[in-house]
Image (cartoon, rainbow, N blue to C red):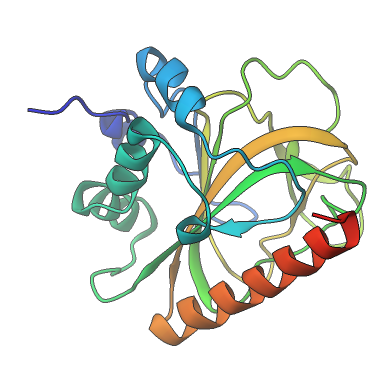
Length: 209
């Protein structure tokens, strides 16, 4: 029997905040004893931007983690937390390795995304910038209800809705994060994969990669 990379019970027992939009924060969602192996197997993404999971190379433990977060136990836990039926909704995963000065602007996610999950892989985050803020409004980064340091293994999940504003202070440098979304249908997955691939291509072209 394989060893799980995640603490699904921690997610199940975590309290969901309801204001200004439903969200849950779970420190050490990724098991601490698995972090070293996952960090070793993390895709070598050295450019800013989000990359579709299928477009990056990773090691075995990271792949196991990706399978688990898209598996039935994870789906059931998220359904229970947010009172939503995801049984017929596909998942989409993107991977980040760095942020630049253009990242972190206040925004909401696309309406085609029903649930957003972010999982961070950055050791103990001591820096004041780069911490994701959950906001009450679209124009004030300090009008926050919660701040999430991108510490190793921390999970943030929220239900996407028109007021699900979030962003962070500018940070340039390594900042590893995996984003998992349950989306409306497979057409969304195909469209987003194409968009991310085109974006990644032009980022690489500008940098001479």
